[in-house]
Length: 207
Image 1 (cartoon, one colour):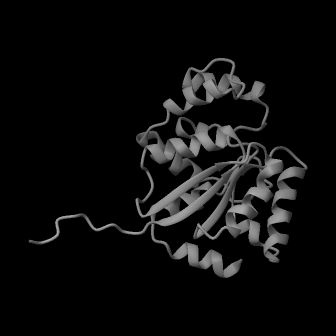
Image 2: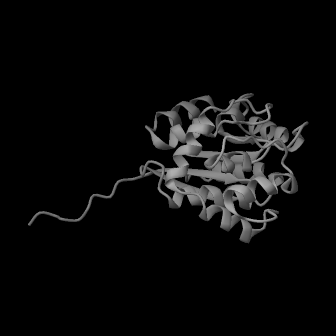
Image 3: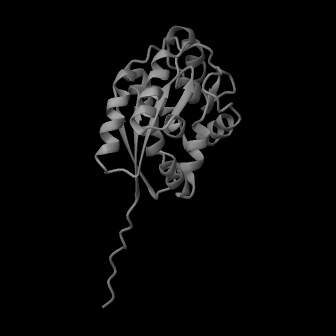
């Protein structure tokens, strides 16, 4: 009798170090919606603060479990000191001046810049929660947004596979330059996660 068991295929293991709860819950929501190619097995690590990102990155990279280790974080506002420090430490770890440009997913000035693109073309100009609260309420119904866990979860429930496509289009129109307010390179990584795996080998050759 022929073996009727399904063939188990090894998936490509990727780890993404998330700056905090907002980044972690957002990517986890996109994973739940299965908007990315199923050949990728993406694990998320909550660094619980941007100061912890370099150490988490090094740990995950050195344990050899993943084919690719990425970072997802804010640039914050000028002079972007903590963000610049994260990039510097990743570059020093690899001994390559441009290593961080290959593995860091950024949003300027904050991750809400990407999240809000699920509903609007409007740009966020400040990382301040109080400043952005009216815009978040307008599109998600979540009042007085302060980034609390319960508020983040309510915002995530408004994210769907349908408005993911809207966000993807809008983010792909944004500048891929981390010093510009209203920029993000998330579009580049969404293209990676939805397509062939050749990008991983290219990145690893550059590190």
